[in-house]
Image 1: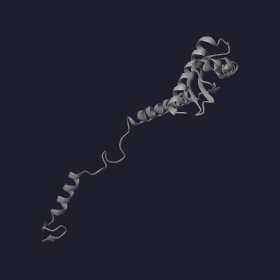
Image 2 (image 1 turned 135 degrees about the vertical axis):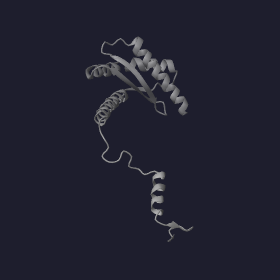
Image 3 (image 1 turned 60 degrees about the vertical axis):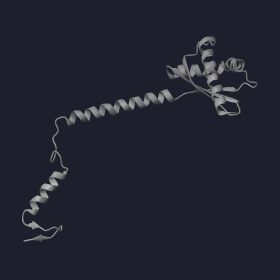
Image 4 (image 1 turned 45 degrees about the horizontal axis):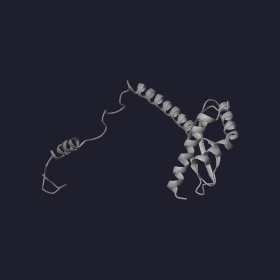
Length: 162
């Protein structure tokens, strides 16, 4: 199977499943579900539908049970709307991506708070040594002029004439 055709078919399966969950499946266990992605194998035999559920772990478990019980109805509608000779089997998988993103957002918030705390502590701080410990080119030239002031230099570097 062509990869582009398989991707288009997966997108169509995602749309059909989302429409079915929104309009036709009336299971009270079904929570606030979002179909995030669908992938299909190269032989078009199996389709994996990824979803997220807004709510608690109990609502997530109830939604998983509702999806399993409605799998046959959803599969027959996928077969009818895609026109495939053999309708792929559907597997529903909870998508952990939003949970991972939320966890990363929490970590970034902690890092920003610690950065703000460090910046607050650094406001009244003074340098332990010079404010600018690095030597610049004009400083080096001035030091060389001081050393050469003791005697005249010849045209060659490192040789002094007295």
